[in-house]
Amino acid sequence: MFLLALSFAGVGEFIDVKHLQLPLSFLLPFVVAASGIVIYFITGEIDRKRILREFKRTNTIYKILFFFSVSLIVSSILLAVIMNPTSFISVVSSLPMLAAASILIAFVAFATVKIYVSRVSSRGSGEPVIL
Image (cartoon, rainbow, N blue to C red):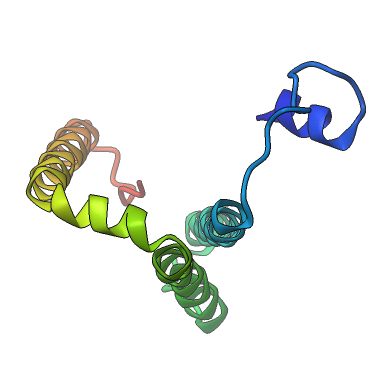
């Protein structure tokens, strides 16, 4: 991604981007979603470090930034649907496969967290488990 950004900026020609023409119907939802994801991760990391230092509950600024980042991600999906209706139709046609993949990903994530928490809590350190 870094080399692609440098190539787009014209700093060097690491990746040939002259023939890469991405339409606005792809770029706009992508940029909105990427912004939401970046805000989401930054907010989570700031809150995690604050909880480690102070052992307090989440504050209002974290909640506002969290909902703002989630709303950016959801609005990017809606924007992509509006700007690319044919792609939306093809995604809806494969909805059962997407649902099965989502369930599988959720199961793997849940199992991973369960295993991690059980290993950390078995050490008996007495500190709260923060993922």
